[in-house]
Amino acid sequence: MLGLGGPYYHDASACLVVDGRIVAFAEEERFSRRKHHKDSRSCAVAAAYCLSEAGITLAEVDEIAIAFNPSWPEPSETCTDGELIAELLDPALFGHHRPRQVTVIEHHLAHAASAFHPSGFEEAAVLVVDGSGDGVSATLAHGTPQGLKVLRQFPFSQSLGWFYETVAEHLGLGDWTSSGKLMGLAGYGNPDRYQLDFLTPRAGGYHLDLSRYGIRPDEQVADQYTDLRYYRRLKTAYATAYTDLGIPAHHRASTYTDGRTIPDTGYRPEHADLAACAQRLLEQCLTELAREALTATGTTRLCIAGGVGLNCSANGRLAQLRGVEELFVQPAAGDAGCAIGAALEVALRRGDLTLPGPAMTSAALGPAFTPGTIRTALDDLGLPYRDLGEDLATTVAGHLALGRTIGWFQGRMEAGPRALGRRSILADAHDPQARDHINDHVKNREPWRPLAPVMLEEAAPDLIGTAAPHPFMIVARPATDTARHLIPAAVHTDGTLRPQTVARDDTDPYAALLASFAEQTGRPPALLNTSFNHEREPIVCTPRDAIATFAAGPLDALAIGPFLVRKDRPI
Image (tube, rainbow, N blue to C red):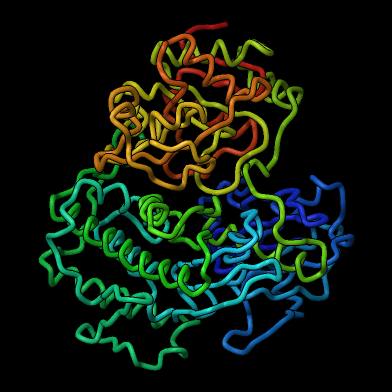
């Protein structure tokens, strides 16, 4: 089963499921090198990768599923539009094979399936919240061994995702792709300063009323959805609302220095305060939705997906909600993850998947490269290197202990926007200057953006107060006093951190690196971990991507496969 995600001209992706098991998943941006693969819905290269991982052709795929309904608002189970299918899967990459039809999986159902089907839970409440898809912006569902049952949905005119992204845009943080920055800025603000009374959390969910800004909640706007007229009206309404608070739209100044255009990365107190208000309001609305879903299903397990599911702070709030005993958040919670849900949903319908299925405990589903391929790339580019073999982890841990910043490229690329030890930049979490160096010089981004810690599971109780696994760096936790003292660079100004935990495993270079770092420093087996990319590029995919990003910035060394490349002196 081949699932295709990202139907709305961003975050295209592909996922291959064989016998109910995810064999491969990748985002198209990693191959096109265009962040979010904006302005295209082609999934072709990602799909070609997935098929190559299984050693099959597109003609051998039993069923292809897309995560949207091209006929919306009319219901549809299949799509036979040859032009659209060719847009998604360029025949030139598949021996000119042209699938005659694809299965339609409604957008929010694909999101819900991406969260519940790989959760390993027999039963769960499922919450999907995003900007919108197929006219829906929030879904409450019940996951059971028979599949998903939709309980309640909120229309696009009640979108929490669009609310949140308009705040980020108004504050000059960027377009919808930059909403995550607002979460970091919120930690510096006062959430009590402004009353955003057009959005009201209430039992069972929330209510959005922008009447005084020209959009009534009872207005019939379905005909304004697909041509984006409603979206443009909404952005205008929100801009007026925020300006009425005394916060005009902020347009960042830029300076041209050393061949680069550098935007102003500062902020004013009112910007942080509005961010804090928006973050708290979002969390309050999500809390009401989660309570409703838990009550309606009678379960203690909660699954999360949708673009808003990438909000670590909100997920942390939901994790501590009374009645939630277990939480699973799809690490590729945005539209790219819909490929996973679409593929698993058709596998379930065909009888190839039985629920509960295997739990998704790793996001390492993308391409890997052999030492021979990596060596060839290094030789072709004339870089000196050492082949450290099994000594790689120990040597790199020594460099990290000396305060160096390392690019780390190992194994299969991870799914989702968070680096999880396959395509990472690593540094010492004890030194706040390491965090500042990464933000200011390595990634050229805002100095107030937090960085996350990775730690061995055994250190988690002391650092995050729980032994529960956190494999995906997508749920914020309150930092313990020990964490504040020993890994302060990973603790955000609001007193939280978003951890990734790793099981001790001598055969895993990542786990071995953490263990060696602890042995050499006498400190916890924990490091700063951020994605291996510059601010304006996707996470690196291939050895050449990694080498190019390493060469273009001030990283001290690159650990790529068994090889170590250093900048300070020839090896």
